[in-house]
Amino acid sequence: MTRDRALGLRLACSLLVLAVSIAACSNSSPGAAAETDLASTSRSTGSVAPTELTVFGAASLKEALGSIQPAYQAAVPDTTLIVATDSSATLRTQIEQGAPADLFLSADQKNPQTLVDAGLTDGPAVAFARNTLTVIVPADNPAGIETPAELARPGVKVVAAGDDVPITAYAERAVGRLATLPGYPKDFSQAYAANIVSREQNVKAVVAKIELGEGDAAIVYITDARASTAVAALAIPNAANVPATDAGVVVAASTRHQAAHAFLDWLVGPVGSAILARFGFQPPP
View 1 (tube, rainbow, N blue to C red):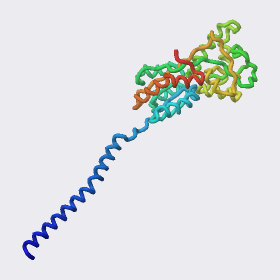
View 2 (view 1 turned 180 degrees about the vertical axis):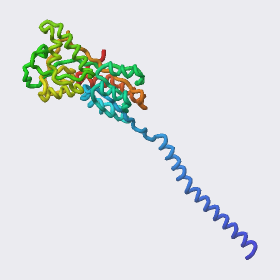
View 3 (view 1 turned 180 degrees about the horizontal axis):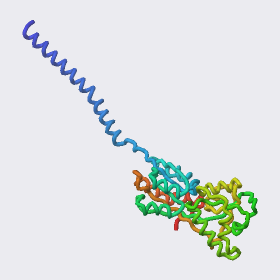
View 4 (view 1 turned 30 degrees about the vertical axis):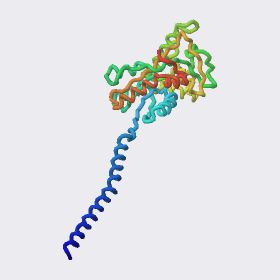
């Protein structure tokens, strides 16, 4: 092989290697860049993990919370509400014992304030609604009760709630006021207490007893009377009625304080208040 031919062959090989290298870079660079851009985009637009808020609510709020839950989830799509209802006193005790709740919505102010005083909340109690009382009887009213005064009539079976349930304290105050009105016997309070045939776990259980005809009458929240088609309501005179203020707190043990406060703010705002109003709740004082 001549010297010139050898030089020409080496030059051709060098050019071939260079061309292959350029082609390889040309083929790999856009893919690598695209992969880098995709990863960057994924990080910047990645979906936020959904927030689950566990709400402990008073039994009297059960129907309202059934509408509040989807309304709030529609307004705040990345938040899911998990709702549990029972007597406010029972729920407060569960929180004291470490139950995993983020929010506590009570039928009174006493139970939330107990948690505040014990340092078990993130912030103060917030009043979000007001309720009033009424007397309920079965729809067919077999005992023929027409006024609250007849709750003291001998033989009338009154259903009440347990001593720690908020409705009990409200009812006892209303009974005490009724006893001072014209037309009510002086021993009205004692006669009413003597007619109590059962004490239930929460106000919904009280209503259920009357619906089933297992009692003649009970004092409940007006919202509970409105929620049932199996009972009739008898008004308590304004002079004796007792306003019940519902209040909520964010639980200190929650890891979602910001989301919990946001829900409580929404609840006392125009949308939450409007939903509560549909169920008979009034604005807080």
